[in-house]
Length: 299
Image (cartoon, rainbow, N blue to C red; front, side, top):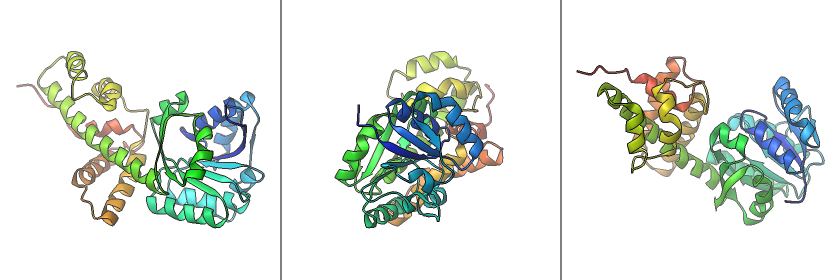
């Protein structure tokens, strides 16, 4: 086990809450902050007995005397606020500290934060995650990391508390661009999976038998293994929300423009997700993409 650290954990949502819990279990001291106080209190009630845990009233208070700040918030604006705001963590994190950011944000902000941290003598790793709430709960997240080698070396023992696959992919911002690659892949797979299910249903096929055979071949994917049954049963009240997926795809499309890369399928699926949002599906799992495709009738 790594040497216990005093960690300020900012953001106790469906991903951050379990991740902070794993850090407690690993023996670290946690001072946590969440914008919604009720959620912070619920986290402390759930995990507080597992180790040295306390709550702070601001990011700056949480980071005071901390060795490491870990963030897992919503978007660019949220991350900038908890790190750079007037009561942000960088106002009190000491020189020689480290920031590990697990938020999915724009690559531009990740690069900017790396500069801000470097100017303060603080290490920075942009480390977005994949694996969803179940991965966070089970400590089995895939983590794609950008940053310098020294910062990565310091961050690795911390992330091992909740990550099962941790890869240093390059300099600051590379973690975020790799997460964009991840989301581009997911968007395409779910679009194809949605059409395939509707096609199979319209043909009157036995959906369990179809899954049994094609999930053992080249069509197999994580989305198929974990979402086929729930999509067939029209169950979507779990997992990674469409609102967050559209946020992520927006960052990917924006970065694609900066790089001069065309992403026509990604842009199309993003608009498909907008259709589901208009059907009040924004908080449903990304597999709810199938809702925009009406069920056919076998002829």
